[in-house]
Amino acid sequence: MAVQEINATEQVKQSIYNENFTFQSIDGGKIELLDFKGNAILISNTASFCGFTNQYKEFQELYDKYGSKGLTLIAIPSDDFMQEYDNNEEVKDFCETNFGITFPISEITKVIGKDAHPFYKWLDASMGYKPRWNFNKILISPEGKVEKFFGSTSKPNSEKFQKSIEDLLPKY
Image (cartoon, rainbow, N blue to C red):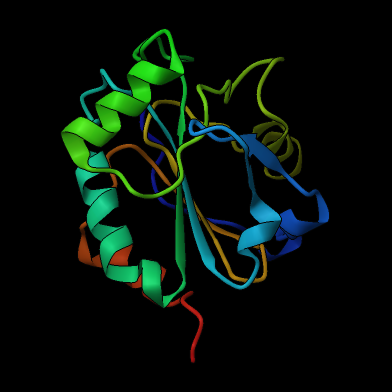
């Protein structure tokens, strides 16, 4: 069910910025990945009723710790594993009320299958990667290269996880 940590191979390290991926924000408007060029980016497909949902708390802690140092964190709520609310307002309220989320959250988005978001289709086509469960994490370098995939069981507050982020933060 959970994907273990995987390093993206050198042959397939393509920049996400060549594709100009955009997600619809749960707040309205758009989340354009190109806007975060120069930052390390952590993207996770999420769900409100998953056994891993408490990782939202750890994500907020990561964002509080590293957001001002060049980390962008984006949650992608998905009902692909049938553990998400039916509408965006409930997801937004749940995240803000229970976890005080301040990082970007997309609208409920498909991450697997023929109707998957273009970002996830691109990951599957170019790297053979697709989420196998909620809270799969994708770490992207400031240059837009997919560096690592982490499964659901990889804890965002673990030393190893945080080291992976620190290694990608811009050096000022």
